[in-house]
Image (cartoon, rainbow, N blue to C red):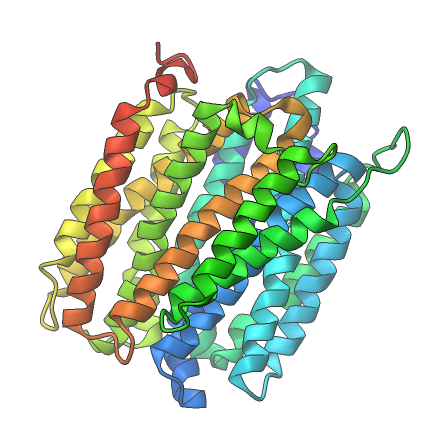
Length: 457
């Protein structure tokens, strides 16, 4: 990472204000590190509270639901008020969530802490994209590829370092350490944000906050998630459909909408980027949580060893991002990444309780390839496809679609690994993921607009 930063300082991003890099990166990684650290903690938490995987899945879904709702809201506020105030409030919530989680006496309190983490980690990525855009205007660099690569390497690969870090923390201080580590992280992030992030002057009257649109959007997501988690509550599906229809109607009529659907409706390439993000996250996070639980319960590895078995994934992802990051083309990266996901899902169908460790390590290397390519490519595509005046909101919505995919992954894990993460359940999950990965590959092949992003044409 330090070598990559040095290249950023010496190359086309040399004029970028380097004081912004540390708070940008730290703020942006708070969400993915909390998304992934808990992967190896689900089994110990379930044992501590006597909860099956179907219940501990709420630790995953709670964070993603809060993030899916909060990211576009915070992104919109970042576009309006600048990144600094939102960053400081958000990092304060992260610290509070760390305290609540570390002292939690019950599972539902842990879920509450994860929801707080979801809202608290919403500001980092939209703030970073806002700052990149503003620095691009100041320096005259239309495509700051180097700094975008640094951001992508940080956010995309920290998610695969997370299980290893989580395993080490559990080995040192038990599963509560996975929550407690957020306290020092929040303190450092708040301090850097207060010290280095610029104050953004606001001109004109305060904008109207689309409370109705936000409420309808949240109702749609909550009802849909609850239905997917517990399909016997069938009545939640028409509630989600009705709230979604009301949200669409309201936003199309609103003069200052929470999500300007008219802009997105006329931007097919951007919508395709959101769709690819959703599909790729389904595979990545089902692998991260479901496969990780299988390693502990189906394969019999400890949390610490499981984290070490996933370390090659992070090394591969960092290496791939660093090598390919400075190339602006996105289509080739997406095709290679999507193909690697298909191969990884197919390989899962052959795994069992006696699978040798070298194959587990090999699969981790294979999964690291899309981790290093797909997120980087989608992020760069969004930078070129989004309305410059709505960069924060568009970046927040990219994360929303990503975490919608993560919610689908959580539902899949809960459905196929309901009582125990055994080998038959893993194979059912792998078959589902293989279908999703094939759709991602097909969608990428069919999207001709990708040839125009980054000079592929």
